[in-house]
Image (cartoon, rainbow, N blue to C red; front, top):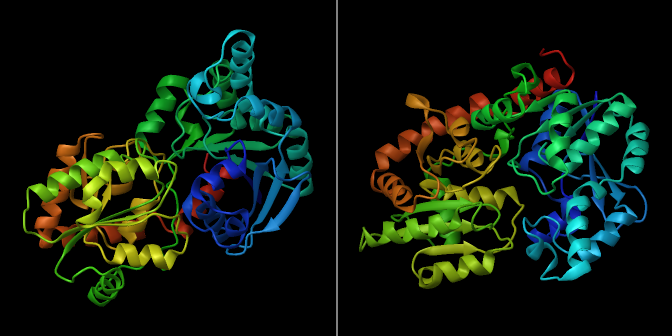
Length: 434
């Protein structure tokens, strides 16, 4: 079975430029995340995957081999209509018209408003995509995030080409265009199924769109556990030495994209300040690894704390060894996100044997588990005081944090391996699971 994996970004460079990553690095070095996790999980189940992206930087469909996985990346040229719309709508992902196109008046405002609503649908080159799907002999289309216009377009294309179309949930649960309101329910009814790890999101689909349970597969995002072994004391000492952190310090870590509100980094900054104030004289460290569009805002928010116990590598890091060393140096993992799909970062931390303190964003309870098998603590999203109490309790109690860390590794082994997720995906995408 050949699976067409469809990126939801209007343009691939929107995603890469935000991270400061070149296409060459994406093609030759990038691994992990939902995208390449799916590629590797499907490969373990005997499925070939072709990753389809759209770019304004190519003039014709162009193929590349993704060096780490061997998967084909097919980059399609952005439609001419979308390119023209983008000249007037520099930020088509914005919620408000002012954020998308600036302050406008009169006819220019009316035109910009129309283009903002249309641009999510103009972004998919349907004719080129249809041609390349046939050329690659794809059997199934699997879209990142069904709450996007590209999913609607792919469902239509699937009907025309008699291909099964599925969508996944990776955090997208809002709409950018008014045209999505009438079209999304039609697309969800017409699609073949939805891959949803989050209980909260599965309930939302049934409640809002009346999607039947038989069309929803509760499948978690995969992780290659061989690349994320738990750290022993020697690993931790080496990691801390490399980072200049004393052995006796108690350390919390976070890694990911710096998106201040969505990732809850404002909450983490406030919580960390509270943790330190409540423990004067203790050697407490916070490791941050990653960058993004809100890096300057986070730096301003952290202020003087950057000079007192916060170690921040302010750049996009794709090297797994660098990330693992970062996690190996920690005692606790902090995950304050307000909104997620089915997050990979805490699973990486769990695989490395770290207990997790997390906000109750959608999907988080499914990742950590509940009751006696829980891999950490969950607190209300946006509540810095509650986050500080939970984080402080694990930094204070080495025995408690070590026990939760052992649970975390066991849960990662049982629920998130490439092999187990790949088998579930293949069965669902082939229709064998229903």
